Image (cartoon, rainbow, N blue to C red; front, side, top):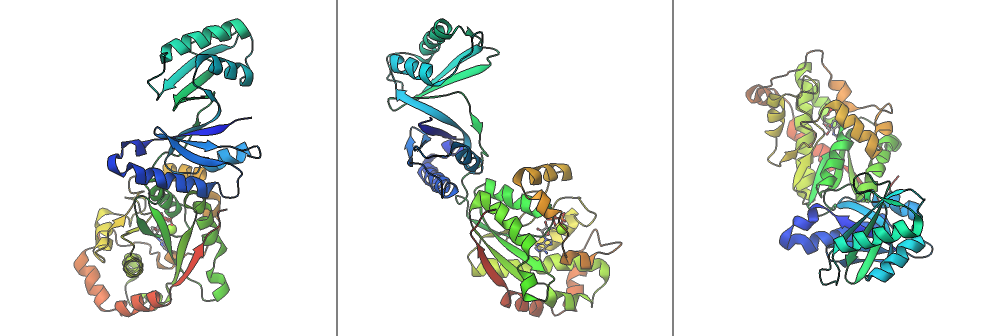
Amino acid sequence: MFDCVLIHYGEIALKGLNRPFYERKLVENIKRALEGEEYAGVKHIHGRLILELSEKSDTSRIEERLKRVFGIAWFAFCYRTKADKESIMRCVEKNIPFNPGEKVRVSTNRADKTLPFTSIELNRELGAHLVNRFNVEVSLKAPEKEVFVEIADGEAYIHTQKVKGLCGLPVGVSGRVLHLLSGGIDSPVAAWLLMKRGCEVDYLHFHAFQRFDERWNAKILDIVKVLNRYSFSARIFFVSFHPFEIEAVKVPLRYRLILFRRYMVRVGEKIANKYGIAALSSGENLAQVSSQTLENLSVIERAVSTPILRPLLTYDKNETVNLAKQIGTFELSIRPYKDCCSLFIAKHPVTKARLEDVERIESGMNLNEAVEASVEKAEVVEVKEAL
Ligand code: ATP
Ligand code: MG
């Protein structure tokens, strides 16, 4: 049975004075990810974390949970012993199975430089011992099994497998964004990428439903629950686009989509200001569709003074689709959905909108009223479960 999990964090190590804050967030997030799991505690040693297991720990579930925590570079289920050669040899012998002829390599890494032996010495001696004891071969270049010995604070952590983590930064170290979430493939991926850089994400969704029970649409809720695997809990602001729809009939069809986007970010900005959220974000991309041009993106931005983050700006669609599959949102995103954007689809949408034209068209609409009415009727729901 394993004693503990050794957890290495990547980029956090670079963060200088902020480092204790980043480490605390990571520990907090690991604990949230492991809610309901059996383990004995999490502690810091020398720039790594040790998750103490208990007899009842379910290691495969713990592995699945840790794979969803941003900020972890890699982790390993370990046996632990005292940091002297004798104990290390005994511990390896007792816990790690070897087959005769197997190609083995020992890799030692010491955070503790006060020990009376070097890493290379231990690699050689432990390697030679395994050759004698189990008839294995040492192969530094192409090992079939690598025995890792990591030494820190007078103890040795022994394992044979590093599990790759998500990397990135712990959710919560970079502040909060209000993310425009549609029912499509792109926007959930964009939200996930923001989490990867340490953002907490709240969602703003515009819906085309009239009936109350339809509004708490299962598809959007399910997408958020999948994203909660990585960020634990979130608020969704559900907003009816109806006040805009009434105004949109007054303007040429080819302008409706870009006007809708300007309306969405205006509503977003008001909600963000009310809740102290510093930025908006979206799943927009450059040139994925003919309306996503630099000119159009710029006209959308000019509607607000809050920054709009677009993590997918430079992604190819297939890169986004692959990520959606990895994250777990793809299957949900392709479920049929009554999306409001579809009501504004024109055969020839404006592709190089000019701000003067857009502002002139908007001046013929009761846009402020539509924005106010939408903000006023926004319904907020807190989603704490993960799917
Ligand atoms: P997605 O797959 O996210 O829908 P898309 O490529 O289909 O992206 P569009 O439909 O053009 O793109 O929308 C661009 C972005 O506008 C979305 O990524 C999302 O951020 C935002 N958006 C679109 N529709 C809505 C909506 N109903 N509610 C909130 N945001 C929306
Ligand atoms: Mg869409």
